[in-house]
Length: 302
Image (tube, rainbow, N blue to C red; front, side):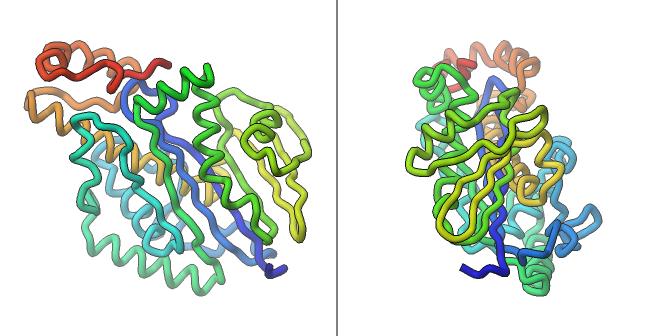
């Protein structure tokens, strides 16, 4: 343990609301100087005008033509991370699954990613910041539905996936701050924390509108975990997790759309959200029947 350093971790998801496609949870983690304040002040390259801009994925990404913006940043950080587990491989046997993973990058030129990674690496070294991890956990539709059946709630499925990514950071020696973008409307997390981390006692610091904070006492420095509304707009680490999750989900949706477009070149792609998913499901009804695509491999229960 180095008392002059702290670990900061961010978690966010992409695909909580759609009817089609996976739910993806992202995590990013850094080791930063303890007195550094907001790491965005240290990493100017990650600002809006920098070569590796980091922000809420909904701000950075506005549709398929913007995929390169996500990819440039995510792959640059991926190259600089000590532990980079993304995109994680699919765990289902859907017919469109074998087309993923794809050769990366899929949208941003290789030389642009390389330049961004070089600029980011130099900025990290100058600031004394270490990129510890950038990971995702992708839940296919069958996995998601099985989780809903097991827990009775998609919010609990989301928490379970996030807890799996967070578990390695609960036992470290550094002072650790974890910022999780709040999961839907949930405001109380103590029960879930006890269930998923039974060997780690925690104290509830506060549960108020907009933020819930919990302290995990441990030997050496403590760990604080917060669940905050719009954390992806407030913390670099949570924003990067948001971008990583969104990028991985878009790779999966590209794969799904490519497979179905191979059957019907005139079919318009879908992002999987409820209204357009209804349109797409209507237009693919015959295709799905003809090619034996099962609803349980494609449609979410919630």
